[in-house]
Image: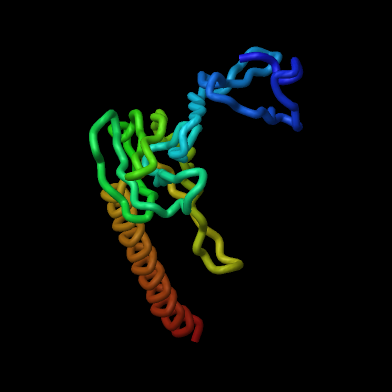
Length: 202
């Protein structure tokens, strides 16, 4: 492929406009000064009256592709037969055919034929894998406290298991009951001693 600025074509921004002729058939691509090149496309120029309009760039799996078979001089909605790799796919009364949800098996060489006008040159359709993006892993948010405002929350050490907590709760309850019993006994002794002291003084 020649440079666009060498009289081979007219540069318009990042595009290159050319007037094509049958001898311009071939593989085309573009490249930058840094080195990377684009995908290659196969351009077919025909001198006949029937042409097949198809994607020049690779299509992605799952996309819909429409092929249009038309003539240069007559209406473009004439009945046409479509072929893939030399085998008839189907005949369409309106001159266009849509391949839904293309897969790698749909990749190949396509052409069409309009009765009474002739056959189009073959065009290669390339199907590429659909690029799937994996969402980043989501982190688990820290637990939020549901305690009402103004309340204090107590965090227990992780080493205390539920059975240990129940034992500690029982021991605490027994201690509280024992203290209450001792308090009651001390109060009763004080109440019983006071009258005896008063009778001895009288």
